[in-house]
Length: 624
Image (tube, rainbow, N blue to C red; front, side, top):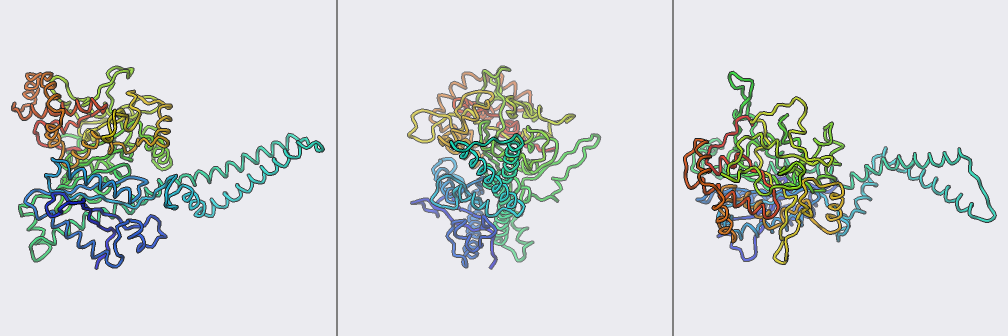
């Protein structure tokens, strides 16, 4: 029996008839240990917490794979797979609870639960560090102890001698001070002796500080989690998707594998849409998984030179393996560099992003975890010569300033015309309206481009994302909340958060418990947007807004404001037929804009969403 690098557990809701449900949920966990010294046999139960018998785990996993494959191919409706991936510093039990929360939400959402979906919560081995915990291994004191015990000989030698030197120097100074205050003792130190004491303290303090900084970096577990994400999280998820693909083909009628593949390709079974929800470092795992799964020998992915020009074009395929097709990518607080949406070089996000049908990014200028901790940690390893290019994608800002001073800002869909609901179809517009806040100044992507860079529309990959800037997002998190409150920040409605504003947010995050890094999954509106975009897609999400309790009121206001003649003129100028469907979707997008505006969310709508989902045009990814 094959040993799998992951374990699978089915999660069911109380009183749920799984045979009748359109949605099935599984927790898939990499069984790689958090530390290489831990026995894998132990990790199957204690690390992933799936409670599988060590000897029977491969049989259980194999049965679950066949179960998932059968569900995906035994329905008359199209089926989809949505995979949710966590980020840095996440406990397995916390993630399982999170998966159950999402499971409960989507099973009770009247639009999502009509679809045939396999929802997967994927757990890659992450360490956890906290100030309070019943598990001693999770305490910060335990992590410090491990870091000191595992110091390499070079660091340990410096650490021991520096510690001894500091203790001896301070002991000598204390002895002198205690003697000098005695009535019967008087001592005058020469300038040279004082210099030696000061030099000794400075010298040993520098040595100690050098090692202590290394200890702090290890205690943060950021680099350890990054290593596990790359070397365990990515390949184990790749193998899981590959195993599902393989199992579906094996269950297809035929005598040989080639015949089975041919029969599946010729059947009426459509490719299974594969979508992702990823948080923080989970976005890094996702993009690298897609990069590995993509067929590099797919001729549609090989750039070709356009005859008579010096431009390259390509038409990447969303197809993955034999049975899957990439659907939607939703990433919140992505812990990946802003460099990945710059147009100057192919990178792991570019090769992944261009394959998804739809892509969405939730960010916040006030995400202190990324802006301070992650940016500082990556300062050591990220190959950038400027501070700006080391910013994280989760800190991306939608520039909606109405005046240059930034005293007034627009909320809702900021790149949509109030008159006719149109969106600038130029993908380059994202380079001007998406940016970062650095040195107390809002800088667009164009501002931080390298000198002499020339960006064409087909190279502006940043324009494939729809951005939700939640810096000023205010909402309720549960039915007990009386008034909306700032979810990720204090919602100060400033174009630029100052250094002092960031200090306050650090206090809020670590003392008051404000979740500035993952609050997107707590606010009522942001949670609805994330899950419906991931499970429904943009077009069906807009349709679902008609069921909102405040829809009629908002729609009547929008209907009175939108100039129908201007809308029709806009459609005619694009060579499109005028029909009520297109006009309705434009108005529905205005409803979404109004709801986001009411909550303080700034949205940059990807031109592709306007052209494809609202106007019905064909998707064109040539050049991306």
